Length: 158
Ligand code: HEC
Image (cartoon, rainbow, N blue to C red; front, side, top):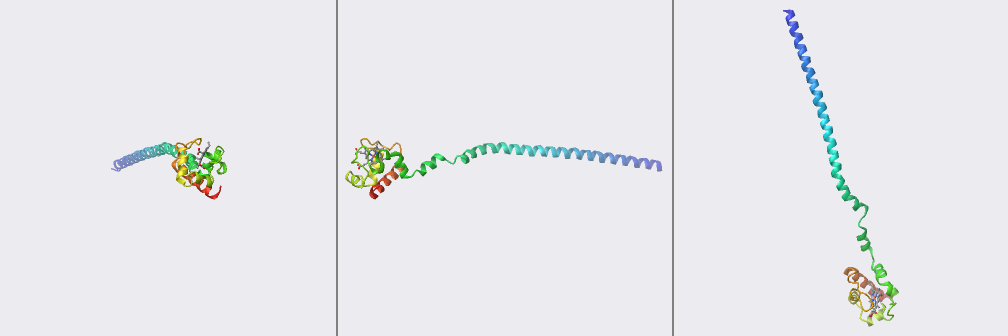
């Protein structure tokens, strides 16, 4: 009686430990694989993120490196600079190195019909005689700005 029950007890103990062992083993395996899968998942997410960021960074980088130099340069050209670059070769200090009388001083300007900004813009756009046309080289805004500048300078005596 005792023997049987002892044996039975031992058997249940062994069975229980076996069950517990497999349970532990199972938990270790699933735990490990879970962690491994988790790690792989995390790495792939990071890698994917990096690859997704590369084109975005490439798209952003040039705009950061070069903040539209051509545009800002053009915008910062003052009327005085535009006159220096395009007109001063012949009209330095409001004179005229080619036809002396046709200068940009107030008296000549009024005599030849350039007392108004519009008329000045006209001759800049279309040219006249030896003076070439600027309509295809300068924007209408630039021509307007130079015309305004020349008008002001002729009024104030250069
Ligand atoms: C290659 C030399 C040359 C350049 C560059 C030049 N001009 Fe002239 N400009 C002339 C000559 C020559 C005349 C006289 C035209 C004529 O009546 O036959 C003239 C006439 C003018 C007149 C009329 C002046 C007057 O008293 O009759 C104005 C205004 C004028 N130029 C403005 C400009 C402006 C502004 C620029 C620059 C955008 C410019 N010019 C560039 C040669 C030049």
